[in-house]
Structures are given as structure tokens and as C-alpha cells.
Amino acid sequence: MAILSMLIGSGVGLATGMYAMALQGRMVLRPRVSYAVYMAIGSFIGYKEWEAGQAFKQVVYSRREELLEKRAQRLAAKEAAKAE
Image 1: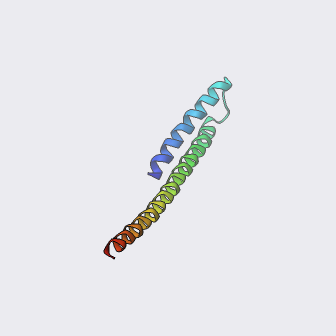
Image 2: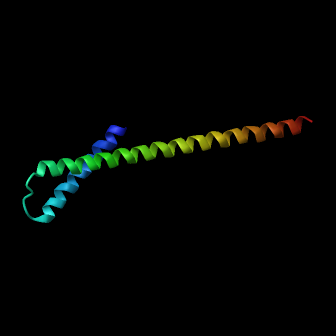
């Protein structure tokens, strides 16, 4: 999925670069280099977005595990209280 995020980011970067150069209304000396810079930046942003999503999923997963443990302890305490 990181590759997909990077490809989407580079596509957005390319579109942004083309739009920015069109707004200038003049020819750029080396448009391929400029496009490459926009694509690289977009790809990097896409990767960082994917990385942040993975970190968020990890936090959610650990919190879920913690809550399940607490629930199991609470249920075990209820069962022990009923058994007495």
C-alpha cells in the first residue's frame, strides 16, 4: 500500500507542478526537472501520509487489545463473584 500512496502522491505532485507552471504563463528552462521535483515531493508526502496511517492503526490496535484485556478481567471478576 505504500507504493500506491507514493504513486498517488507523485501523480498529485505532477498535476500540481503542471498547474503551477501553467499559472506562470512562461516557459520554464528545464520543465522535466521541475516536474521531477514536484513528483518527488508528492511521493514523499504520500509515503509520510501512509506512514502516519500505519502508526494510527498501531495505536488503535494496541488500545483495542488493552480494552479487551480489561473486559476479560471484569468478566472474570463477575464470574468469580457469582461463584461465591
